[in-house]
Every structure is written in C-alpha cells, then in structure tokens.
Length: 299
Image (cartoon, rainbow, N blue to C red; front, side):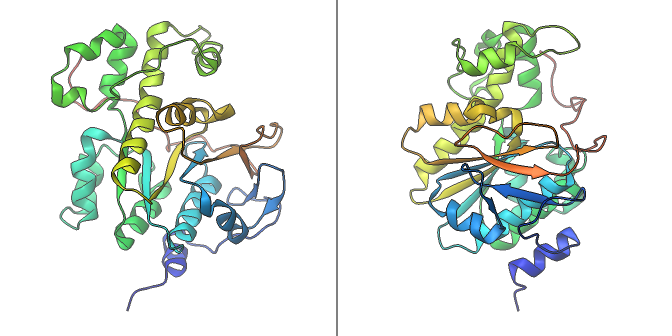
C-alpha cells in the first residue's frame, strides 16, 4: 500500500505541516501572496494552481525554507496538473546520474557522490528528491557545471567557444550580457570588498540563463506541465535573474516567484510572494561546494 504523500513528507522532515501563523522558530514560515495576505499552505497552492513555473527562492541551508519547499512540492503533487521539479543544486552534466537514481538504478550514497550533491544534501534537499522519486516525476538538473562557470568568470564568455559540443550543451546557448536591471544589481554588489568584473557577471548570468533555458526547453517538450524550481533568492530578486531570462525565452509563461525574507528585511515588491522566516540561516553547510571535484578539468 502506498503511503500518502503528506505522511511520507512528515517522515522525511520529522514534523508536521505548518498552517498560517507568524514564524516563531527556525523551522517555521509564513507565506504571503503579492497583496500581502497571509496564507496557509492549502490556500497558497490553490492560488498557485494556474502558475506554469513556481520559483521558490531560498537562503541556502535555512531549515524553514527547505521545509517549506518540500511541503509545497507535496501539495503541488496532489493537484491534477503534471509537475516536474527543477533544481539549481544539480548541473546538466549530472542529469544521467540523477535519472539513474530516480529510476532505482543507483544507490543513494553513489548518487550523492557522483552527482556532486551540495553539502547538506541529506538535510536540505533529500526530501524533495525522495518525493519526486516516489511519485515518478522528472527532476531537472537545471544548472551549468561549476567548473565551466568558474572558467567563464576567469576568461570571459569566449571560453565557451573552446568547449567540445557535448560540453557546450551544458550551458545555455545564449547568455544575456546586455546592460539590464539584473546586471546593474549584480555589479552593485561587493565580493570581498571589490566590485565584480564583466567576466564575473558573465559567469553569474550563465547560471541564470542555463536554468531558464532548462525550464523553457522542458515545458516546450511537455505541453501542459508545470515546473517548480528551487533556487537561491538572488536569482529571482526583483523579478530579475532566472525569472527575467525565462520570461524572455517564453513570454507566455505565468510565473510565481516566492521570495524569502528574514526579520528586518523589507517585503519584496509585487508580484513577488513573501516567504517570512523567523531567523537568518545558520552558519551553513547547505550552500554549493566550495571546491571543484578533481575530475573536473581546469580552464
């Protein structure tokens, strides 16, 4: 007998689903729609039913946000419209590994190693992948490989022209390099006290363009489907980044952007949804790996 999704999720997360109440602990959240109305998860998923792409921003390693992502996925899976999960946390070159695990052809430890899973995978992302595996839905390894992104940051977008065709396909065919709101936002940031370079922006947008292209290509090949994306919140802030690049590729798609905020931060402007959490993320093991695995080549 199949275990209901909600019970499976409670086992994976070690807790129960949250309803509408102000967040009080590191595990709690409160979702508000673009008008600022607080919603419980059932109300929210009913409003999200018409969205083609639901982008759930995250603070990497934040337990309440990862809990919310898994609980939202479970609710969406209970709706009749077919769904795929897209994840920033896996890159296109690892799609065969992810597919093998979902098909039951690879053990979990081997999957985590061969997929270069992020630190904190078991705590933060395992519930999502296990729900997808149980329900038999596709999971898109949506991002560009880290070593290619790193090389773009060092040598510029021209680095892509030197890649063999098979590797070039792991990054979006077109990078959005023009001066736009996202570039201005990125260039105004500081990394170790220094302004980013043009090459670093090219590396940044290679993530966004690749994730956007991955989703656009999937939806073109699967009419009637929708996609839920897990992604760092900078990539959807102000409706820019991945969201903007997806809209440029597929203007007819209806996007819902769920943006997390911690105490003291302003609510995101409409049409973004606000996901309020009680505390900043813990000192994290949940972000992307700092090192590039040995088997990945240098530039």
